[in-house]
Length: 536
Image (cartoon, rainbow, N blue to C red):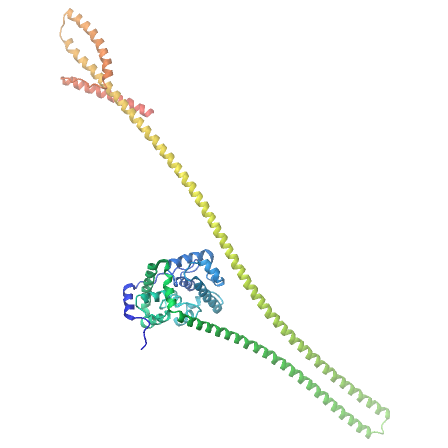
């Protein structure tokens, strides 16, 4: 009986507890890339693999300060990539190795570092392409399909499998690939986002509970599956070796084919040369036969015409001999020309071979120079980025100094305003005190006038009666004495008016008159004090 990789009831309980139908949150990408760029999303998923979103955002910020696009990560060494992301990032050596292997394979297939050709491809081609990249984990390929192409896929990494094991939802022998296959088989496509949300929430909850030691969760998984991983690595290495062997075999086939073509060409030239030589030899033979036949004919004619003149016969024989010599010389010349053509063809073949070898060597040298130039350009970009960072730090320090100076100036201005406010308050207090003194003086003057009117009111009844002379004299003397006493009393009343209250009077009219005079005096005093305050 086959044991399922995942325990269904407990897995469904986890989905009910942590799952949500919320859409997938936007994936943050590297600066200078579009939010829906598949290659930038692939990089972010490599950073999220066996990590947390906070660490991934921090790593993206570091990369944005150093590089412009993802292609620069492809030409970096693993050590440089680890230094750029941060040596304390979880599983940084393995992450850098896997990332560079995937990017180099993309460049080898497309001759550029881009995944834009997958936008219009079928879902089958998208899945096959991403899962076929070397060293790519199932988490990265599945989340890239889900986030970049909205292609439902299971998104699981080693930490998630270990947390599921802690909750009793998977078997101890289950691997990440087994869990991915089980989810893809037993759940519909429209449930993949909910499953991803549930597993992500479960994983981040466990990581938050473990704190900085959350990498031990995957360490436990690797320790439990050490033998399986060794077999998987051996199989992967075997596949890589077979791939390299196929490449080497293809190169050998191409080289053998090229050498066979060269040998075939040489045989064709040799056969052509031999055919030409045979044709020339046949022609020479035909010419010789013709000459022999001609000589025989001439001999018969000579034998038949012995009676002819010996001179004519001698001329005819000499002509025949000259013709044979000329034919023989022509044949020899043709043979020499054929030999010269053969040597020229051999020289041309040798020159073509040397030119081909030089061209291949020049291509190799150009490729090596291009690689060196690319490395130099990357180093120059890195130096420029470092200089820009130093300039930014200097600018920030200068802005900080300016901000400090502005803060000191603001403090001085606030202190000056505070001093001015204190001075204004002191001036207001002085003005209030002056007003109070003026009011006191006005009340004293009013009291003096009231006392004078009171004295005048006391003298008024005595004048109404008809006195005698003696009484008139007495009254005159009393007047003089009353005047002096009034003066003295007015002086004394003016001195003690502020402290002693005015005596009560029984006469209502006198009291009314005293009130009117006191109001008039107080109004005049207040007006004078107001004028003084205005002048001040």
